[in-house]
Image 1 (cartoon, rainbow, N blue to C red):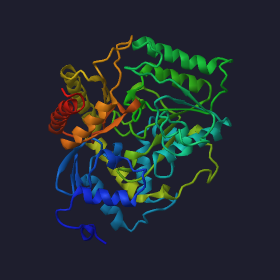
Image 2: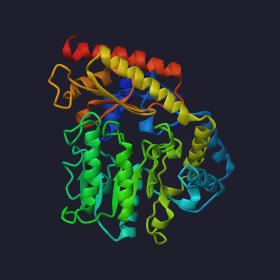
Image 3: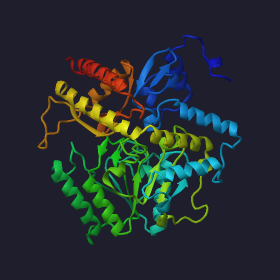
Image 4: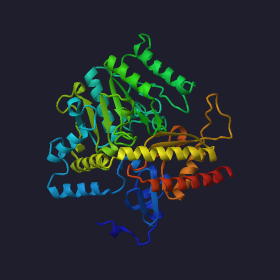
Length: 457
């Protein structure tokens, strides 16, 4: 049945499809509650709903659509694969397409194929996280894991156990045991109450002391897992000196260091991987979202010495998704050929600078942060008293109203961070200067409208 054959009429409304969705799908659906539209088509940084309304998309599939919607290179790759005669799935059997994608992906990792090998997993980032932890336990023979407050690693049992946010955990008992959480540096809300370089220095020392203190009360872990830029946690960027110390200590004690690059990877931060900003090399890199060029795929980059698997030690039916390998290869090539890491850096720097200017006009913007095209704007209640570090209380009601007003102004973006107070932008890497300027026009209008709606001023 074609899409057109199920349309009730040429002028069908979003409400028609949203109502049907609510009747046929579980309560678990989330994005339609915040972004109530039914999408008819999309191209680049723009999506069009079933009523013909165009939206500027700064969500991009939560970072999955590195090249935006329906990029010509991605579409061509799909068409070429479909007409090639290749099977669409091959388990872990190889093909010429898989061979080319594997080599291209390995070239993006530090040291390339001399240092790393790849493991193809199930299709989601959570699947990759589960495989990475299982591998670390297999390699070390140890069972515990260190994760960090504010981190997000997925919604499966093991991944959720390592995720900081409590809302999804509270109703689920018996998550993976042995997860020890530690504080993650935060430029605006230092978890130690120190702020600035003093907070970073203290947390850097704290991690090393925690691992090496023979009376810390925690046995040596199999792995440390973290994001170099926390995404769902509110776009919190790890300081270089802290990351370097974690790399130094984990290497010294033969603890597997896992970098979750599911959202921050593939040039989003201005470099191919966010950990590159600190000049470190992880033992395992978790990749999903953009790695499949908009189609489902998850891959681990594993330092060869840690490849402790026995044959079939970890499997997954959809690890042989040939279409995703084709679109992934097209995405990698396009990022390199068009130098999209530089575009992400330049456009991101521009947006950050302009958001900081908006903060002068709208003091409800408490903090602007991020790297490249992974940006966070923290919304606060400036009418309240700041704490001893100068940080103001978050305003989740206003942040929600800003997201709604952005939608009303045809701008799609997400919230995140503690209590949903951070407006998050994950623009496609291909976004132009003119489109960035349009983002700002719509965002500024949305803030003004939200302030009136929530505060009456």
